Amino acid sequence: LKDVPITPRYNNANVHYCVELWRKAKGLNRGRAVLACVLAHLIAMKTFVESDDDKFDVLLEDNVRAPISIPASLLSNQEDGGKEELYCECAERIWNTIQTGEQWENESGRQCHLRYYGWLGSIPNLEWLLHHYIPQTSFPANNNNEQNKDSGGGGVFPFPSFVVQINNDNEDATTKKQPEEEKEDTNNDDDKKHNANTAGGTPIWGAYAYSISSTGYQSLIQSLQHDVGAILWKGKRMRCYLVKPIDKILPRRILSTLGDELEEEEQKKGMGVVHVTSEPAFFRAPMLSSKIHPQWDEGFCRSTEYQLDHYGSCGRLDWDDLWLTTEEAEIVAYKKKSSCKGENGNDGIWLTLAQLAELKLKEGGKDGDA
Image 1 (spheres, helix red, strand yellow):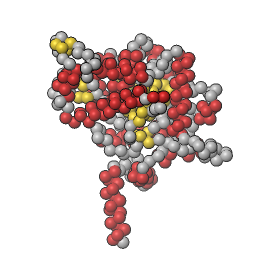
Image 2 (spheres, rainbow, N blue to C red):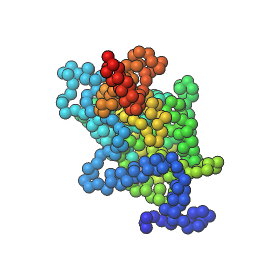
Image 3 (cartoon, rainbow, N blue to C red):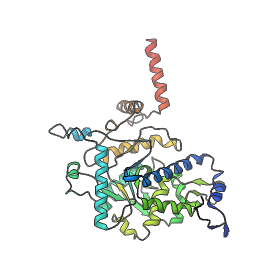
Image 4 (cartoon, helix red, strand yellow):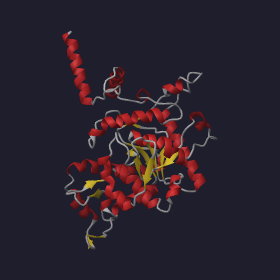
């Protein structure tokens, strides 16, 4: 920490960064899991940008699943039975996104510093992005490229740097661009008020599949080192500090440091420095028990189902198109089976891993009794 600057704080009192961080973080309690996630991402980013020969393309969390084969909906439309054997839908989407980003950089003369290959949001927000924001702001793929001709996809759109307000009928949506200070103060309030089943709030969640440039990483670190409040925050009536999650820190800090010269309208036209793929290459694993917000696990699954079904020009995806563990495949199969029976309003029932183990134990006992 010798290189971390000592800046005036607390009425111009010189307090070292680590001292201020400790004073504010020692009462985090349950927020320590969120802080651990933030620090883990910062360590991973350091390895990502300092690697030799650019040997890393994507930074992934361990909670993602990817489509590794030809989607069933695409395979059924192929007269010759499909594409060549060496085909991976996930790799196709990654390369299409990279090539589209490079095309945007060549045409605009700017550089994308943060690119998302996987992301999520509530279903109303996904609908708003799909039908309103993406058509207006996306940068289309280079159709002159043979690889993109085969896939038909690969567009990117700028990260929405505002909070979405969606009406109950979901026909209209308004956006409110907030000053950086207001964003920081209301950051975690958005998470409390808007979960996976409600409209509005931050349009895009997650930081489980992305790449960051060296410039983007350095600007992020410098921003965090000059302000403990970039990680920890406390409202006027709060007793303890809370940690800002990494998926809020990343885009907002990079946009504020590297994209502040951009006008708001230019960002809406696709001229931002943070890009999001319109065809996600990675998806959140079904019913993976979260250590931070387990109450949202089922909502994450419903949002992922919508994203699989609607986000992809090559054809719709299904859970069966993703690589899943044996237990996850059994959870998906049970959900589909219960949905066909009309359980839970035809939405089906999502089991946790613990509930799946208990169910298998009961079924094993019945077979033994028989």
